[in-house]
Length: 292
Image 1 (cartoon, rainbow, N blue to C red):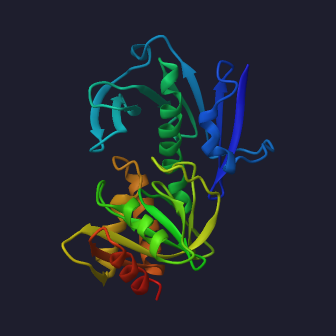
Image 2: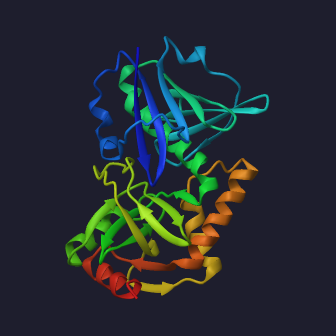
């Protein structure tokens, strides 16, 4: 017996299928705001969780590369003409393995320890979501987003730059501001307009809001000894947004879709660069500049 759950994020649905040994999973609570009725229609992907005695039973191929500068690490294995993925807390060894169909519509995430279930499902679902939604003018972005004046404001930057801190400063300094997502919001172009959505994936901040907003601005942050904001041109805007988007960068078709969608976004949304200190003055300066 298995338990099947259907969710919709930014209008894209997917299924999670869990074995009977996981009948009640508190760690699925971030997905609850996104749960939808399973009407039998097809979803973008189905992800199944399976337990094995040892990951060595499913470990195949040679390591191509290990991505990310910090956990979670993404391992890419290659076996003949197909890719197999793994995720881990360290660069020493994989903690779970993801085996997917060629088009990523069907996948199984394998674990050998029950405590890795949440970690495995979360990372596998994000990867599949990013890969499967790219052809649909959709981007899963590593960023923090706040809601203000009925619009979304997105903050980008390398890990440790202070995206979450800057969002918090907006919450404290700019009246009427609330947090939409603090790690992996979704951008989607609908009817020629750019929208930003909350997702079940919000990093260390428990913020799982199923809401859609027009995207007003994208701001790339850099730590600096003083606060200064500047509007970016199209080339600079592209260079700021593109690296923050999840994508199978080794796959030509995925990269083509990524380029096209990023180009559409920056043609519609103003992009900025903020040199900043972690203070309220930076939040105020940013708000006054980008709300225009």
